Amino acid sequence: MEKGKGVMGFGRRWAVEFTDNSAALSSRDIHDPPGFTRASQDQDDSSVSRQKKDAEANWKSQKAWEIAQAPFKNLMMMGFMMWMAGSTVHLFSIGITFSALWQPINALQGVGKVFEPYKDSKVDLLAPKLLFIALNLGGLALGIWKLNTLGLLPTHASDWVSSLPPPQEVEYSGGGFPLH
Image (cartoon, rainbow, N blue to C red):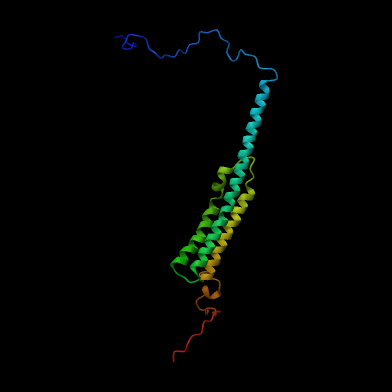
């Protein structure tokens, strides 16, 4: 049996011939229809590409604002968790307070990296960055306030000098039945 022939001895049934021996006109030889010019097609392509660039810049601007507003959600959640932790010093309240201080500090250190994907000559990132920084500073202030309510911030002179008496407590608790 010869190579390339089937069992019956016939040639291959399916074959594709890639050489073009015909004298048919190619698409380059056909004239443009009346009213059509290739220059207008190039202009359409440039306007489409300009529209795509504008749409991409608009999308980047929207995403930058979404990223800038994200710390607000974290701020609300952290405030609720601090309220639920109470004002006594215990493991849970210390952990929540540490988290409330650590997250904004990390976010403030990485402002450039957070907004790097949205950097574009058509997108102004100053306002979203400022909002991002302001909200994270608000989160940091919330954590510092919680440290103060727990009594862990040195706010009196007696916190620094051991010979001074501590300040008088403002709160007084009483009531109930006498146990005589």
